[in-house]
Length: 629
Ligand code: ADP
Ligand code: MG
Image (cartoon, rainbow, N blue to C red; front, side, top):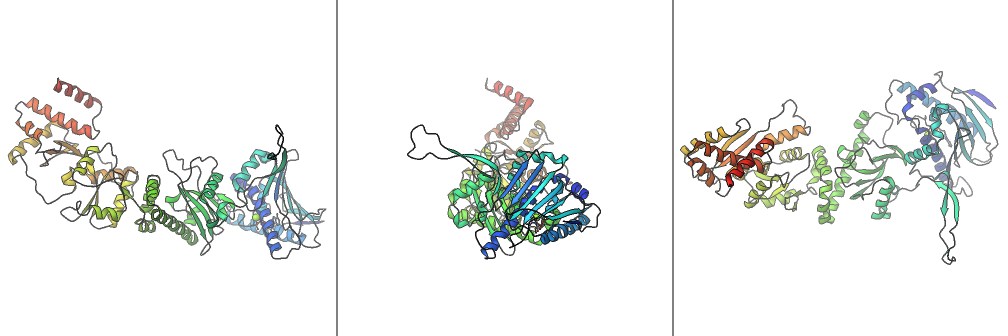
């Protein structure tokens, strides 16, 4: 038996490790199973190389919890270790790794994903165990089994032991303050979280399986039940396979495997697979986005060689794609650094731009292959796409080929199609192309109708970021302007050269304007006299595009909008001087009657903009009844 002192200078390293990793004790199981997996994969590799003669069988990993003995055992049938290897890999390498780790990070308590990257993996077991034993026997001919034990102080024992099977068994003697890990439920939960897709089968207990009845079984025969190993993981998850070997159904069933509580099918998937200049595989899904979506649930999961690392992919996946679901697996993502560092890392930047490109390519191909199906999905994906166009220039460049602009009549144009369609009709006298849009079909109905009557197209742009989005579009092209249909009366929205003739003389106009101004709240409404078609409504309330857009952008957190203060609501009251009613108002002799007419017309205009509420509405209704009496 050898007694020795582990190669470490810090007097007692474990208290520091324990404290440091306090919040993340549970990862000990992931680390030990990762080691068991590595050892088993090495064995398989040696076997394919012919370095190991004979059949290695189907090695599995087993986890056993013994509540009475307060033990957790992790058993593998992998390569095992010789006494020299234990000396080297457990006593020396691991500890120098631990030392380096503690040196480097003793002041920083964030980022606990570090373990396993400093050779600290095995020692994470001391976060939950007061002492740890290793029983191991190497695959190498003639090697003797050894037992190692350490109680968390730098002293260890190493001795020969009886063990005939190849592989390693780790025995954790669970500390009194970590007894929760002796609960079967807890271990099941952890295995599910971290090891669900690891490449070697993991057995945890047994389960009953009912055999199917034989076809010629006599009536009333009871099916036989047998006890089988309870394998908790799927060693061959979809993302490790080739896209060519998978059908849509396979992708959908993998989605259910990933998110068992999700009942809605994803809209489509993107299979990621690249090995240069970095390694990355994965599958991303576009979910149906609805208002009840909880962005903290069912997020993209990040794996490293099939070991779950985190579901916080901030900095790795571009922001606009964080609402997607699925998995990303890469050994090349440096997890031992802080998030802010991650964002600056060159490899990570390349990963983000690769993912962006793949998503754009997928959208292009979906659009090309089945435009109708793509249009049907548009409402569910537009937020992600518009957000992407806003935030990623590369994505914006490609979006020409798939971004859609639906009209209120549900025609879906690409931008160039739209441009071509409206150029002849919606170019104003200064050569600007005016794109009309509505944000709410019902509320803006009369404005939409007025535009349609002129033969104009009206887009329906109703996502919450629309004001930022159109701002971006306007900035990307010369002579392009977006205006909401209710931001002015139709003739002013797209100004043509035609000068319209007013039925009122200048003198009459000068009399009319102050009459109206007196009858309405002047601070909020600016009176604007216009000679319009006599069929157009006499009073129309509009809200100038610029003011409204700035206000919206400010409300949704627009950059650069700070310090502009809160905009008050400002409207224009457009008065159609060619409408018969306006003539009537002017001709009305009694002041009182005149005022009543103005108020009534003004209230009707407000009503059509959904601006009439409370006492005003009550008064309006009373007055209206009086009028028809
Ligand atoms: P890492 O896995 O990052 O190398 P660990 O501290 O987890 O660091 O493990 C240290 C080393 O101990 C491993 O590299 C391996 O050589 C050895 N080891 C740990 N567990 C096993 C095991 N179950 N079977 C064989 N070797 C093991
Ligand atoms: Mg390890």
